[in-house]
Amino acid sequence: MLYPVPAVMVTTLDQDDKPNILTVAWAGTVCSDPVMVSISVRPKRYSYQALKDNGEFVINLVSEDLTRAADTCGVRTGAKVDKFKLCGLTVQESQHIRTPGIAESPVNIECKVRQIIPLGVHDLFIAEVVGVSVDDRYLDDQGKLDLAKARLIAYSHGEYRALGRCIGTFGYSVRKHKTPKKQTAPRKNNGVIKRK
Image (cartoon, rainbow, N blue to C red; front, side, top):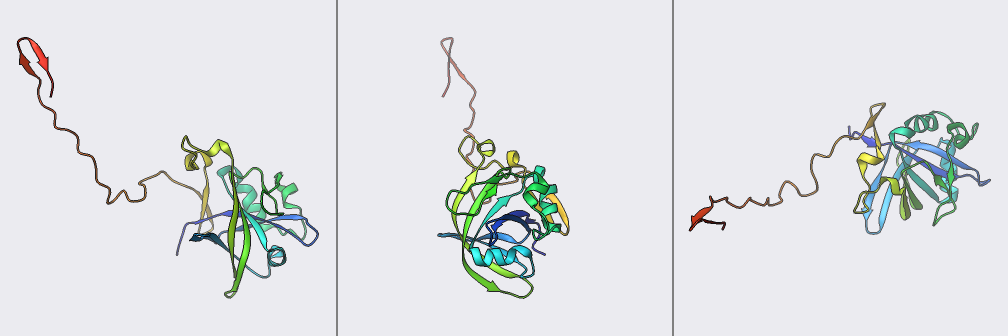
């Protein structure tokens, strides 16, 4: 019941260096130093062997505009179809690994697999983040990802959901609020108004 979860498109390279895309709903950050992420993939998925053999992948965040492509990549197999071509997506060269990302994605997170843990029907791939690319159109004035501009989605019980509005920031519940200065009425002195 840990919903919603991010819906991401993960890119891989197969043994013939052909890029493929799989949709993953179980992805997340697992460590901040070094920055590590995880994805869970079923061993029967076409991309599983490529992930295991190649040892790298790119997590491509999904915007509202990419929702249909993410769904298509989740229900079609790369064994039978070129998902980049089918979805009209562009291969984007990565900066630190051979596996490409998706150019239309607002954020591409380049990862190197450090550990694979068999869990049951899924295996957990723990990977170190070695590079991140962000489309400048989605950055705010401070250089941070603006979620409102990026229009990222989440996945919950079979439904794709748009992310909502910001309702607080980290630590806002304990942050001291500035109290406004007490306003005093201006005093009159020889016809000149002075303010404290």
